[in-house]
Image (tube, rainbow, N blue to C red; front, top):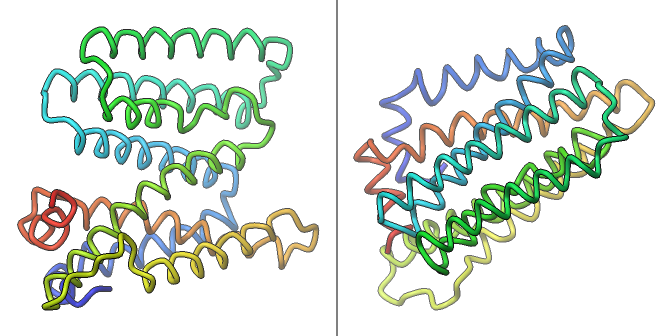
Length: 254
């Protein structure tokens, strides 16, 4: 809602106003009438969105094309693998309790090979940490008993990356409009908004555990917030658009 986006939003009403409203309506219909399918779509969108961001973050830390290609293939592989495991366990409800230990050993072995290959090809650098994060985000699919807990770890890691990058944009915009630079690495206003939003949405998510149906249904509010976030991110962080390069990317790369 920053004023630098106002004209851009008004010029792109279909993609930035009408489609989000359509998504909002779809979420309500899906949640109340096609609940299980809706949750599967939500989980798939979550995995796809976070995977795309993980790859995008990795690209910020390296410009070597071979490194970027390596990370892209491995991050996509691991996140697809974890989505497939979660699909088998939580949506098809296949009981693999007797094989959980072997599954985790196999996954960690494959991950270890990927990390060893990375070190052999590119050496130890800061991009390694973004790479490991991108590969591990949905690893809880291999051992937790609730699909919500799979998302919990991923969203926390994803959200911390997102807040750091978005904070850089907020600070950059403020510094551009002031004669005196902001020395703090965090905007207190931004931090306060993030804490309030996170607290409200986390509280509403807790209602999903209640037996009372009216309270239980309140979980749709943070879910809609998440799905709108997935879509709007694809528009506002699309750096093929000049507006986004000028109003977002330049502050991240500064």
